Amino acid sequence: MQTDFDSFKQWLTDHDYADLTTQSYLGSLKLFATWFEKENGEELSPSKLTPTDLRNYREHLSRKQHRAPATVNRQLAGLGTYCKWAVKEHLIEANPSANIHGLSKTRLAPHWLERKQRFALQRVIEREWQQTSQMSTRRSVWRRRDLCIVMSLLHLGLRVAELTGITLPDITLGERSGKLEVHGKGARERTLPINVEARKYLREWLDIRPDVSSESLFVSQLGETLTTRSVQRLVADIGHLAKIAELTPHVLRHTFAKKLAENKVSIDRIATLLGHSSVDTTRIYVLPSLNDLAQDVEGLVDQ
Image (cartoon, rainbow, N blue to C red; front, side, top):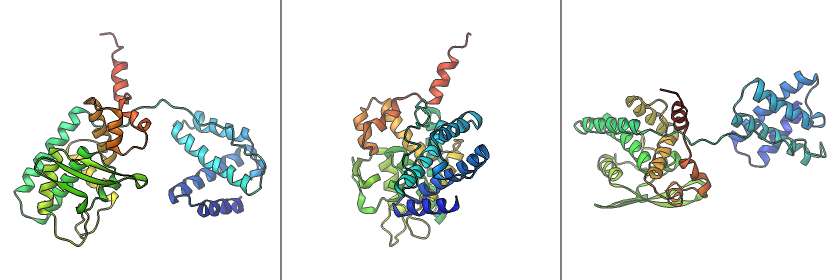
């Protein structure tokens, strides 16, 4: 098995699979190999693997371990690639995973901030901004940077990698308008209008932004481009002040999109603003959230 494992790993590397994907697939294979040996009393090898094994393992993950459909499907994806490798390496003739389907699941809208949470976050940002504006310390400068980042994510719907990739030439601020050139996912670029609220915070950040060699709009205290991890941490910190558990850049992006949907903006326009290549991806914002469904169920209780 170790020889097969090493060969599979090398094949993934040679075919330019992303590091995270490679690690995920190898992890799935290790877990399956352990289960296979315990279940069948023999070591896993491509020639011994059957469609029945894969169906039983899917059942094991779903029914016995109570894994979510998304988790089960990720495991099956790794095993499917393993089977594909075995066929291409002529270790087996037929792919045993060819007719093994993943688990379906009810598609729910992603998590976004409810109205009360949006107001709580807005109040914290306004309060913190007022307090730090009266200070002249380095700490207050970086705090206002953090607040500006949260407002930019909330009002522009950016992915965190898009935010950290913004440079000074990408942004144009006028008295009554503003625009941002975004370098998006998959080398796609788009131009976003900047609303009055975001312009206010961005303009004030630019006024106090340290003069450093980096052209990044948001820089670290070392004068370097902020990392995505740094952005995630500072967003979570401000969320904590607003008593919002697990606030992330992606939650802010979802909130931006949901607010557009609530304001009756068409799906194609929301897709353009978010940088989606297909409106099918954008349809999640008109789906009910888990909270929406919970309220519907509560409505069935007799008063």
